[in-house]
Image (cartoon, rainbow, N blue to C red; front, side, top):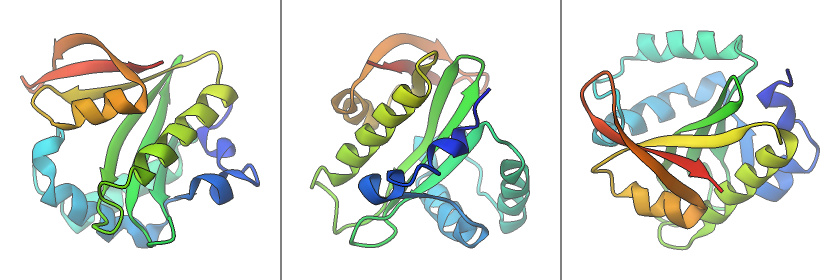
Length: 166
């Protein structure tokens, strides 16, 4: 099975799509942003520095996961996680935090390009995401090219929409 991270070692991917794999130095940025916006995620507890470090240690040895930072001209402005589970690529922790790019469509275009690259590189998979039912990002995912598949209930009791990239 191909590694998700190999996809981003292609020479043109970082240049065209403005994404790079996360590094240890990104942990605090990711943790703070996720904590600030935890109402949009399944895990709603405050993430400590030590919990984030533990997550990163596990992430580093998992070839089926890729967490990326979006780096347009404006700087480090967002992130997206991808993980392969059997024949599904799960999209998670999609965050855009730069005021300078808000409303421009640049993040949407970059993420769509990334997902098209992933679908080309892994044609045997489907790309899916789970979005909390009340999250306003549902419409953003639809603009991105995701379709609603079904309404489900998470083990935490939260309702979410399973969406598939078309």
